[in-house]
Amino acid sequence: MEVNKEACLEIFWMNSASPDAFIDLYDRFQADTGIKVDIVPSASPMEEPILAKWAAGERPDILDWHSLGVWFIQINAPETCQDLSDMEFVDKYKPEFKFINELLYPDGKIWGVNLIHPHVTGYCYNKEIFTELNLEIPKNYDEFFKLCGDIKDAGITPLYGAAQDAWPLQIDTFGFYCDGYKDDPTGFYEDLNTGKTNFVQPAYLDALNAVQKLLDAGYYQENVNVGTFAESQDALYNGDVAMTAQLEWLPQIIADNYGMEEANAKIGMFGISMESNCVPWGLWSPGACWVLPKTGDPLREAAAREFINYISGEGYEQFAKDYGMPAVLEGVDVEIKLEGLAEIISYFEKDSAPVFHQLVNASYGTYEFYMQEMFAGTKTPEDVAQALSDEFAKNAIKLGLPGWELIFADVVMISLPMVILFIFAHRQITSGIMSGAVKG
Image (tube, rainbow, N blue to C red; front, top):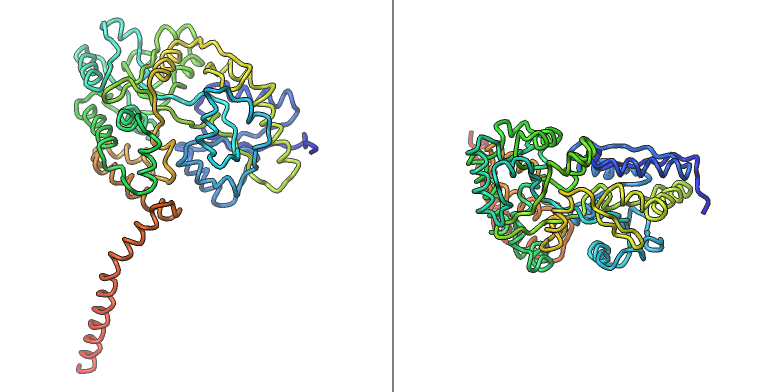
């Protein structure tokens, strides 16, 4: 089909606070193809504003979205997006990364293109502080907690929490969940998705309590409730704090801001769970899922497909090298020059598990704001777990997920006697009132 090079493709951009490699990719696409793009960044947290636009019928030409089950399911791609199954990138994945499409698209149809190694999370740490205090990388939560105590005793703040931004607080818990389900994540989340279990269980409560224990011990900075993601970068780099929980893009952003040599000298990254160094991974935006919404304009839709051909074809090698993560497509190999990134990837290759929202099939509410309330002291770990469970149940029933129709029926059957009693009592009360009114 003819491509409309006069068009200006609109891209809903999920995460503007990300490495320069993505913006550079968009710039090269425009320069090499002559097709212009208009990047529309979203507010943070990013998901709800974009979903509100989506629900109102707004459709960009390209959507940079999450490949996480909980978010991907909400755009209803089979109805709203172009089928990309016939595009060349589908057969280009390296064997070790073919699982991505198999996991995301069990029906065999491909609705989005993922060009990045799964994002990994852990604790970024200041190497100079660790060297000065002769600290070793912890191997489990107990060692991690003791490490924080040793750092605080030395007069240094152990942890930075970005509670004002809210979204980073989720990351503090991701690693602590892993050991609870890593042996069978698919089976574990199948039970959650079908209503056989919920979030009020040890795997989640232990993780939430682990963070609460760190809070209670005073291991976060004093102004934790006004902390921001942007400030966490400088605080870690400058040595104002020893560690912060984040994705692997934090060392990359620090390298963008201060240079590779400085980032390698100062920033490392390790994984930690309750009993091991298990690393959680997930397919977050940016780069995890470019989808092409149906816009009703054939020429613009063709131009959007040209974008996918470019970023997975001639534009991919440079992007992969700029991004600095292991390449997922055949024919491209990347030397990881950023030491903190190489460190966390080595932990990932030894022991890893998907983050919980990678495999859940319904929304669990605003986890970041539940965590924000926990950091503010207005929610307990049990409150957070219960809020997750309640929201998940409500949305699973709304979506009609398998297993939840029986739970809905049980709720109806349990409620029915009370409804009947209310109707009967209401009639009796109304009758009495009317009788009294007549007598009066």
